[in-house]
Structures are given as C-alpha cells and as structure tokens.
Length: 340
Ligand SMILES: Cc1cc2nc3c(=O)[nH]c(=O)nc-3n(C[C@H](O)[C@H](O)[C@H](O)COP(=O)(O)OP(=O)(O)OC[C@H]3O[C@@H](n4cnc5c(N)ncnc54)[C@H](O)[C@@H]3O)c2cc1C
Image 1 (spheres, rainbow, N blue to C red):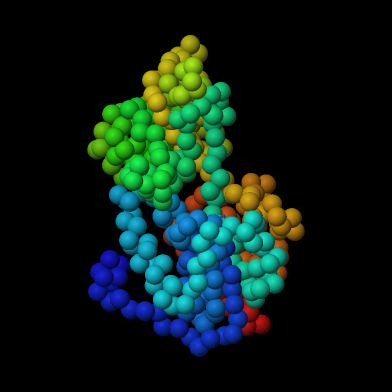
Image 2 (tube, rainbow, N blue to C red):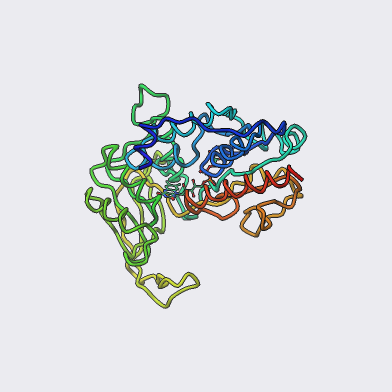
C-alpha cells in the first residue's frame, strides 16, 4: 500500500498556518525526519542538521540497497523538502555547530543522532589492514558507492574470503554485501548457536539461501596478519553453551584446546553499536545513562529545557519503527511545549 500510494497519489503535505516558531532537528535518520515532517505539518519552520552528505540515517548508509531501495528513502526526503523542511547536510552538531548555538537560534531542538559508534572485539590484531567495523563497511558501499570504485572515490577491499563477526541483522547485511562484492566465501562467525542469534529468522534464511557459511559456537581470539600488516586470517576458538546469562540466552563457554585459524583477507566486526559521544560530550549539563544514551522525561524532553531527544540515541540500537514513533511523539510534545 505504501509503495502504491507513493507512486500513485504523489500528494504533498497539507500544512497548518505558520506558527512563526522554529525547531532544529539534529540528525536526519528516521527519528529526525519523522519529527521534521510532523512539525512542518503543524506549521513550524524546521531545519534538519545532518552530519553526512545525505539525509536518511541508517536507511541510507547502513541498510543495503537490496533490502531498502534508496529511491524510496529519497522520495520521503523530497516530500519533506517540498513541504519547506530545510536539510543542512555536512553539519555535525558538536563540531560545525554547538547545541547552544542551535538553542539561541531556534525555539526548540530535537536530538536524534542515533547510536552509530561501533563496538570492537578488543582482540590482538584488530587494527590490521582489512578489518572494518560493519558501519564503515556498509557506509563505504551504500553511501559512498565503493562498489563502483574507481569510478567512485571511495575504495573497499574486495576480500576473497570475508569473515563477519556477529549474529544480528547488521551482520547479515554485511555478510550478504560481502557476497555481492564478489567474495568466494562469506562467513558468519558467531559465538553462540543458531537459536540464540539476534538476527530475524528471515534474514538468516536469506543469508543461507545466498550460500553464506555459518561458523556457529565460534569466538574470535586474534586477527592474524602478514609481514605487511594485511589480514590473513582469524584465529578462533570453539565454544559450547552453558547456563543462561543475564540476557536469558545460554552463555558461550570456551572449549579448551579448540583454537584454529580461518584463512581470510577481510574481517567485518558487527557486534553492536553505542551512542556516539560527539554531541553529548559538548554539553555536560545533559543527563545521560551509564551507556551514554540521553535520558528523557515522559514527554521526550532532556534535562535541558526545550531540548528533546528520541530514537537510538535514547533507546540504544533499536528499530526504525520505534525511532519513527519517537519522532512523532516528540513533535507532539514540542508543539505542546511551544504553545505554552
Ligand atoms: C546495518 C543496519 C541494518 C538495520 N536493519 C534494520 C531493519 O531491517 N529494521 C529495523 O527496524 N531496524 C534496522 N536497523 C536499526 C535502525 O536502522 C535504527 O534503529 C534506526 O535507524 C534509528 O533511527 P535514528 O533516527 O534514531 O538514528 P539513525 O538512523 O542512526 O540516524 C541518525 C542520523 O544522525 C546523524 N548524526 C549523528 N551524529 C550527528 C551529529 N553530531 N550532528 C548531526 N547529525 C548527526 C547520522 O549521520 C544519521 O544520519 C538496522 C541498523 C543497521 C546499522
């Protein structure tokens, strides 16, 4: 229905009369774009500040084209700009602009800068050439078009054998991308069993259908390199499942003497992301939880009056629909706040 309506109705947004008030949105992902649209509809003058050269957030730099065609995201962004939303790309709040500058210029601010800071394995050899975070790997391909290199400026190492560490949806996207970049073998390395994988069943099913190899109950110990510091393998250890841990999933326990090396030339680390401190580090008065996520009240307002937040920066890595819901709720809360 959404596809049909986008292609056939082509209806522009109906807007309330201008309120004369303005709102800054930090981050052009699903949370920020949804808030921007709702606020524009309510008659606010909205500017989105986006760090990258394109709006869309994970929808453009993370989720691959084969799962979400970028023209769909672009159509949504175009609809917003037609409704008068300004999108300032290449604008990093916390660097290009400070939050205080935005607070002085705008009547309210919505922060939705996501949770894009990659978590690494912390094993020896992780800084060798050929190790990518899933974020970097997917951004190079999706946003920067590295699959077209040298036509495109951004290169990517096209490994013959690519190991992707992790068992979530991001790992599935990365491993299927590696296969499309021409890897003869693309391998998932996951320390628990299939039943414990956080990826959705259909994502695992698609990966299997595309010939992805799954090395289950396997944990990385060390990245092995050659004399020129290029990745040549991943030293792993077999695991068995013990008692359930705090997450309710059975804990992986190392099997003594089971170490072995998987030959590979590219390793992609997809074991999670955290809140990026780039913005929050510049506003010490903003209350954060121990993981660095912004704390908000029941209206989505942060500890700074007039500054709201939502999406992954509040929840930690979650989902598109939850981020969009936060954007909608924040727009309603900002509307209430500014009316008062
Ligand atoms: C590879 C991958 C696949 C996924 N697949 C799915 C899926 O299939 N289904 C699903 O529901 N969820 C999926 N998710 C999760 C989902 O994409 C996120 O939960 C969602 O995008 C969060 O939205 P957000 O708006 O909070 O943040 P983001 O989408 O991360 O957007 C944040 C935006 O803020 C910008 N930004 C960051 N810092 C600053 C700054 N200081 N100043 C200005 N701009 C800044 C970023 O460049 C980015 O554009 C996936 C995530 C990844 C990484």
